[in-house]
Length: 365
Image (tube, rainbow, N blue to C red):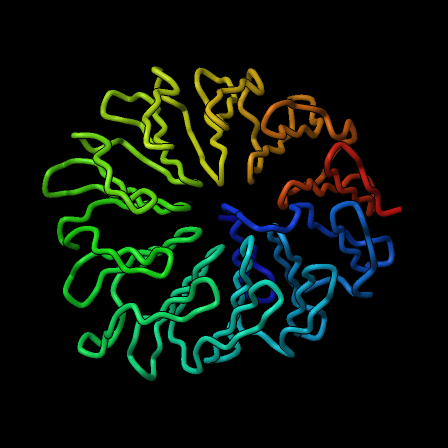
């Protein structure tokens, strides 16, 4: 999850995506400050003033314009979603935002009001969960429909809520941890026995503190992973990465556990279908069942998304790993860069910006 602070709080979640749209959405500003959207190799001007804040998903470019309105570029069309916005969350598939107490969601071109009196909400690629302050209900949204998750009238407020890309979990009024997944609710564990928990796509990983063991709710199945609590763990798309009690780096996916490294990693990070990690100062990636060595040093700055990695090498060159191979995007001195979908947007020189996508570079000149 990437956080950016502009005029308002903007949360950009670049996690899993099963969208039917191509994943080459980005933007750049030209020398006059005009906003040009990059849409899978095509560019067009959509505004003449820089955005106050923005977020990019796999299928949408969202921004707060100079007057405070919320605009969403999606499926080749610019939508005026709202004349003002209190806050918004941009994910790969959904855009959730509030206007004072109203909560709305933009889903594949359709704008829907979820709640007229929202106290708090959590949003991800395919799921939105919120607390309806008027009806005292914990509610969920998935696949165009609203669901009642829990009646919290007696407690007055919702308990802990956890959000993954297409799955959510919550502690109900009876103290149980439940999964909200594909429109159904499944009880996971008694809340007082719950230790650490992590969420991904189609997966919840959690520790049973009563037994000191490690488990998962994975694609509607309960799986026992380890008899001992791991040192740490993370979740991605149908994948759990963790460091076990012996300091081995392991990955669980497709109902199988693999040992990725017998050396304790210096770090590891997972997003979508890719994990990057460092072992003995080597920068490595794990994707699609394979381990790739990217560099013999750990870059200070990098971004991961879908199956890709963008980073600066030791010479300051901008590189891109597409899940199978690494190539150098730019030998210029890059001042800033980001990875949105499968597109790399980067800045160099004086007001020079480019977007790299599918082997081609698109410039703002």
